[in-house]
Image (tube, rainbow, N blue to C red; front, top):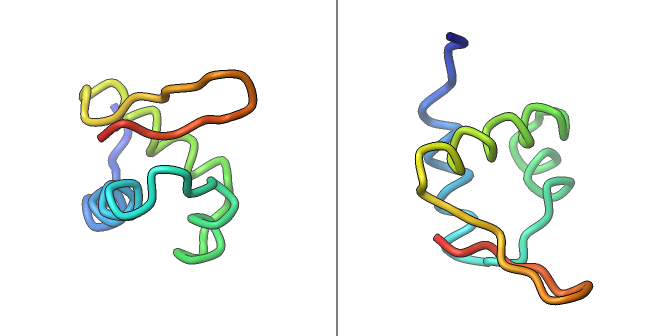
Length: 64
């Protein structure tokens, strides 16, 4: 099992709570990491059932 930075995980979760339409590109730029890292952390949050994606057509938002 890979180790995850709990601070980054919590920061991503807080950002998604503040703005449910935030992008992975924005998160990567804000926290100084690449988009792949953000995708990996979002996958962890999904597996922990803390977030899920809701979409209708092109409109997508995170449910925390």
